[in-house]
Length: 126
Length: 140
Image (cartoon, rainbow over all chains, first blue to last red; front, side, top):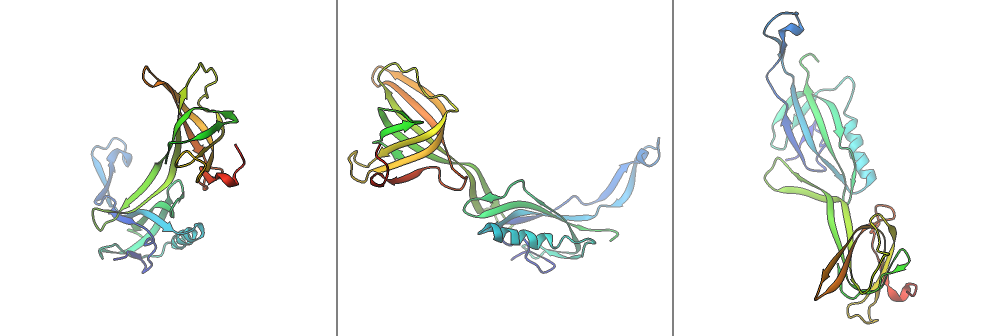
């Protein structure tokens, strides 16, 4: 099935994969908060982050820009939360689209394409 | 592309006589290939960066102090036909840069010079090798 974010198939022009960033607790050495204190301090749970890596594929330069613009239009400030759904129907609710990083070059060959990394975050304190 | 009957080979306006064969090799300098979360097989592949190499083999019959040097740039031109006749004769041209010049010496084959050139596209999008009918091309 096609993936979606806020019911938009932003990444379906080309291949893409989903991955989760590390989950668990955010900790720092205690002396960062209290000089001389031993041990480790717990800051709280890590925020859930989902990373989509893939490639936008289009038939022309203009068509690729249309795809890129549709994605960056979702990078709002403040972020608007939505549900992210992967290829297999796994859903992550209340996700914010926070980062879209393109590869260092647009590839122009049989297809016009560019690789990217898109990061979604579930803010603990939205 | 392998051309066994090249004639009138010239580079940077200098004649390269006694060419015995010319090979034009194309390879992916960088390829992109992608898999998805669906399974083990690639679903997308493309070759956005290619290298076109031209290898010319010449019989060297006498001393030659004017061999091309790596980095030298010029227009490579030669003619070829399937049967070494004037039938279906083609003219091939390319702007090229010399990448290597090597020699092979043997009692049986004599002296062979192999020149490898990198073909350069005029704009990055057009094929660096131009092929046209020799009839419509300027006479060598």
